[in-house]
Length: 153
Image (tube, rainbow, N blue to C red):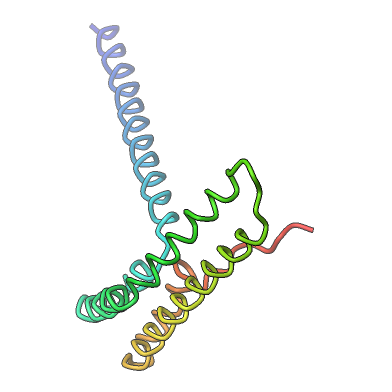
């Protein structure tokens, strides 16, 4: 009978160990997946995640309106990138046409970026000091103020 009790105790200890290992492994796997998703979240919509729901909606609406107002620029930049790809893949390389397409695309992208920056700056002007600090912290982590590690020399 004591042999059976010893076997049961050893079995119980091993099962608890195995369940703990499975639970811990599952937890680490889930946390690793979550961290990967969070690390990939870039952009202005993720930068506002620490603000209140009402403030997040204000920023989203301002960015939506900016997008509607800038549709011609967005389409121009998209077409410019398509033109660049076609010019680079063409059998006859036309440097002048490529330079012109690059200039058009760069101008559209630059103007669009300026409009987005103005929208965010205007939105930031409506925030309290604490909300602005939260926004800056999030912009540094997820948005255009993200610096990243220094380049290797």
